[in-house]
Image 1 (cartoon, one colour):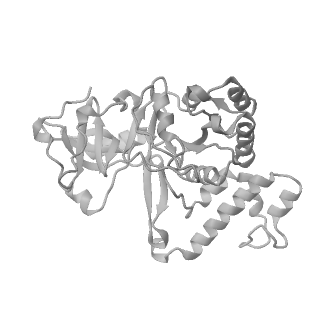
Image 2 (cartoon, one colour; image 1 turned 180 degrees about the vertical axis):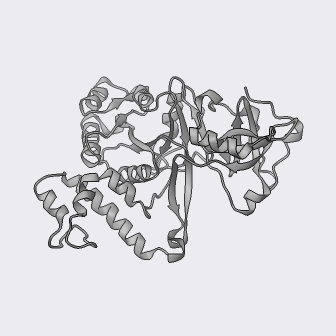
Image 3 (cartoon, helix red, strand yellow; image 1 turned 90 degrees about the horizontal axis):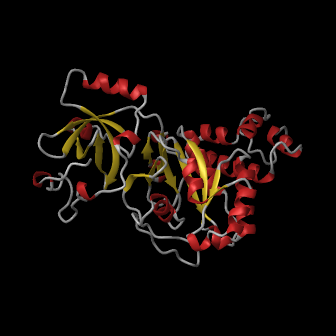
Amino acid sequence: MVKRQKASSRKRLSGIAAGEALPALDRLSDLPAWDDLAPSEAQLTAFRDAAGEDDGLALGCVVRLDRGYPAVLAGDDLMRAEFAARLSKADVRAAVGDWVVVRPAPEHDNAVIEGVLPRESDIARWRGGSRGERQTLAANVDLVLVVQQLSERELSCDRIARSAVIACDCGAEVAFVLTKADRAGADATSSAVALVREVLGEAARVAVVASGADGATGELADAAVAAGALWGADGVRALVPAGTVAIVLGESGAGKSTLLNELIGHEALETGEVRERDDAGRHTTVTRRMVKIPGAGVIVDEPGLRSLPLVGHERGLAKVFPEIADAAQRCRFRDCTHTHEPGCAVVEAHEVREFPDARLRAYLALSGEMRDSRSTLDPDVR
C-alpha cells in the first residue's frame, strides 16, 4: 500500500525549480511491492550495522528517480527522499535498485537518506569522454535485457556485444530481446537469432517479439523457436522469473516501452515515433523506474542510450569471449592486436576454427576500442 501524499509533502523538494513539481506518489503505478524485492545477506548486515539501536532508521529500496530525486519503498510505505547533508557534500548518489538507510519524517511521506548500502552489482557506463565519469544506470540488478530492433537490414551485433561486455563486467547476467520481428520477416528473424548465437555463443539466451498482435504470426514464432530463441511476451517473462530484477537497455526506438507495456498488460509507458530513414527514435522514457511484471519479476525501465563506450571493461570482455581472451594470453607480444603480428595465438586459434569469424570480429572491435580508450584517458581519471 502506498501512503497518500499529504499537503505538507506536496511542496517541492529543495533544489527543484519552480514549475517542476515531482509526480504525486499516490499517482504512481506498476511499482514493485516490498515482497518483490530482496536485499542480500551482506546488505542486511550492513543495514543492521549502520542502524544500530536507532529505531528511527528503516531499510529502503530506491524504486524510481525523477530528475535525480529518489522515491524509496520501505515496507508498505513509499516516500520521497533527499540525501543527508553529509552525503550531499560527499556527492553520494543513489541509483534505481540501491538499498538505502532512510529516516522517514513523522506524519508525512518525505524521508532523508542516511546511507547507501554496498551494491551487489553496478550497471554503469562511461560518460563524458577522457575527463568523464562512470554513470550508474541501475544497482543490484540480476539481469541485463539487451533490446535490439529487427528490420530488413542485417542485424548489427556491435551494440549487443558491447552491452554483453558491460553487463558481465558489472556483475550481472545478460539476455537478448529482438523486437519488431514482423518488420524483418521469418527468414531475417531466424538469421538474426543465429548471428547473435554465433557472436555470443550457443548458450546466449534470446527472445523474439513482434510489434503487436498483428505481427505475431505462427511463421515468425516457428522461425524464432527453430533458431533457438524464446517467442513473444511469455518468452521474455521466462527470462525474468519472479524474484529477479532486470534492467532493459537499448537505443531510443528499439521498442523498449512497447515491450514493457505488453509485459505489464496495459499502456503504462509512453511510446514514440521512429524515423524511417535510420530507425532512430526520440527519447520517450525520461524517468528511471522499477516496473513490476505480472507473473514475473521486476524490470528497470531505462531511457534510451545513444552510446555505450567501453572504458576499462577488460574483465567483461574476457567473460564474454573467454576462449579468445585465453588465446590472447599466449601471444608472443603483450601489445598484440591479433591482426597481423607474428606469434599471435588468437590468429592461430582462428585458423583451426576454434571460434567463428563473427565472434572474432566482435572481439577485435571491442578490444581495439578499449585499447584506444586507455591511450586517450586522462591519467587523473583512470
